[in-house]
Image 1 (tube, rainbow, N blue to C red):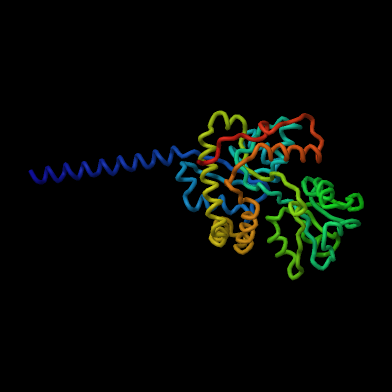
Image 2 (image 1 turned 90 degrees about the horizontal axis):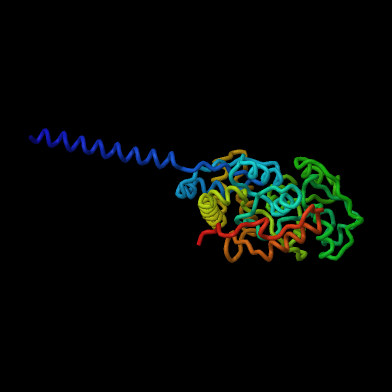
Length: 328
């Protein structure tokens, strides 16, 4: 009798274990696969996404996230619009331009860089000590960069005439060499790229002139989603935003750990550079409510885009951002 009872208990235990495994497998199978595309390449400044992955924040939201590289924000919003990626990280300027000129149905759902990252970097030895010193100088950036296009707006608020400043276009890989060899006086760059540029320029020192320091105020990079996704699966977007912001909070609280995590996932990215770029992200990202989007500042951003680029049609804040995706 005791043998029968033992076998019965053992059988019951086995069934319980089997059932638990089925539940676990089913839960894993049910995780939503999300392809997330960056704004450009893959750098230490993207560490917080990998922190969210490493710490299990995405898994806790039942998300299986695959992070892929982009060739620029314009490319990012197109990938999100056509469904190649479900979510992306893109510049607000690209979102406005995409909506106004090409009817690209993509909106911002969370703001990661509420402060402008645009800047011009020079060598300390150049003698350029203030924005007015750019008069008569030659600067370089990529053909699609918004830094040169915004330069006239920057010059206006900084108080100098930009007409005698020359910009030349080149590829992104050539920029550090042009600067360090002194073939140009400065290059356009986002402030988050300063650590990588400084390492490339060493032992020479670089000095940055952020457009924000002159008083320019507009939105830059944020998380974007397509109109269809916003309508059909808002819960997935909310879960992704929640986990990502959790990763951002963790990363800026401990940049050293974030840099190490980034290097773990992508050994080609130097840990020290990733740490420094995460600190630069903190300078741009921190606001009273992380990820928040203010409609008035969206309108201000649209006005700056309209003053900088030709737009085929007018857009308003509700065309380029969707509220309701931040965690409580």
